Length: 156
Ligand code: SME
Image (cartoon, rainbow, N blue to C red; front, side):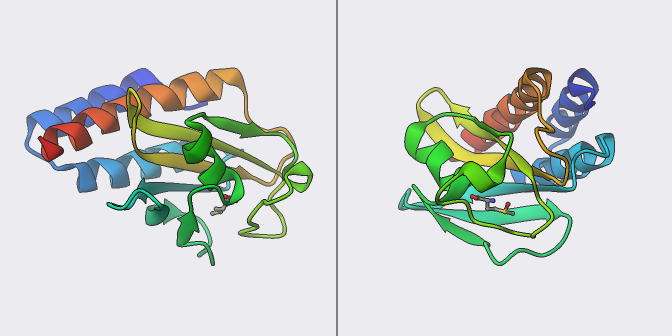
């Protein structure tokens, strides 16, 4: 289980020391991936300027064919379209699921957002079925919210 309090504190310290969102996004992905064996692939996608595609910023795990995902496509694109986090216990039940690896069984997407404005998302894959819990979502949301603070500050 990820220790969100600790990671959020670390990200805030990075902010205080002048690190930009690029560094924070990489550190968050590394920390999350190392925190739990259930997390087989962890990455951050950012919404492009036009707001119609997600672009892969950084990840831990195997390379993916899906470095760009159109809004509305796959679990990732649906999260943006519906402005809602996704917890998919069985990826085979999602019609437009985009497979990164044949071993993945469940997926969670947590949005990086400031209110209605979506900056991107943290995407997690697991090779276990129904790997993700509400507690995971809460912890990941706390990390996402800290990332969103820095992204918003850089866009001002
Ligand atoms: N499975 C995702 C695509 C991204 S990969 O998991 C890395 C989806 O359906 O949107």
